[in-house]
Length: 482
Image 1 (spheres, helix red, strand yellow):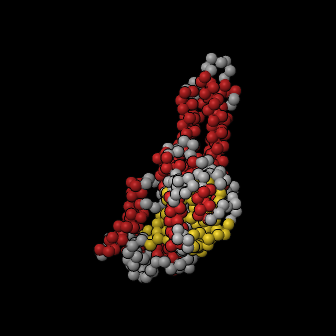
Image 2 (cartoon, helix red, strand yellow):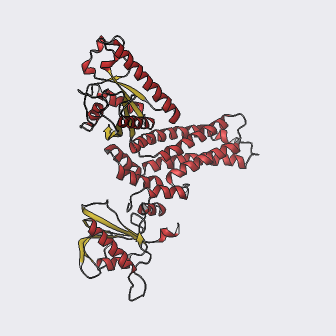
Image 3 (cartoon, helix red, strand yellow):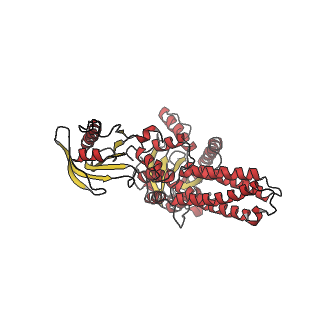
């Protein structure tokens, strides 16, 4: 542990702003003396005591609850004092300042400060201490932040599963299988003169296959958790007046964007967080794509392309009434040609920026104004009416399908991109290990190295082999006091 991890720390542990209750939390070693000074008496461990918190002049800052958690039975594994008062910002700041003041004050009997070195906590430092003191592993620590930041009920439940240790238990199971196989391979390396084929007799290939199957199951659940955590950025794109703003309003169930018959009404992006079956979607309505003459609209079109290039999924919205205009066929020909140009540009941009894996769903709007049986060649895609709601359920289902969301019967646990990155490395290394085992003369040293690297990547997830700089980056993103 770094030197700063030995310092006692204090912070306001509730969100900024006004509330009915606010909490100031202190964590460190040997808080007993400070507790007596701040609270006016010793506290019964893990019992809430209602008492006044006094200022230096003897006045009362506030009346509230104080709870003392002696180590190691606390959130951080150290002594912890939590003081719950009314949630006004001024009250909390006064109580925080009083904690720092008392900590620096001298005990007349000993000539020492009541709690030397007490300082404000850095972002995420309480949870970091819980990790360093083995109260939770790294995946569980990250789940604390994920539970706080959850946007949907499904995401909150998944984060709670990770916090309870389901994800960690799955990774630990993989590590157990991997270590057992690695021990077998390295034993074979240590005793090459033995007549017994250790690997074949112990069914190393079968053990590896079982490990790979378990890994696939964990990756499936983790990938779903990553979708819940990150959400899906869905960009609505298309020509002016196709109904993009109407579609955003229909999906959100609220009038968020201005809708008029005038082409080019939307000049800038309009974003809204919605959910489909508990999956958070960041839906972005963009300016109509065309060769704009107006300077402001040009900027809007440029921003629309920037949003398209960073999307996880694209709803390419078409106006069905302009697809086959029987009265003015040339208009339909021009409209289809412009749509084809947009589709070609989208494809080129995605290939350049993200590869070919970004799904584009063709959505045909205004079905309420067209008899589809009258169309000579019905277009492929999802038929909807943003006005009446026809086809929206099909569109929602299609969206979840193309982004890879699947309902996992045993429950999803929250995961992050770094977890998926590590699991992908493990899959690759186990694939190489399988090739070595299947060879006539396997290179056991290379096989052992692949298994060792796989073990390191799994250990990164739970914090066993996580570099210090990555640990610092992870915890620095937490809210202060958490």
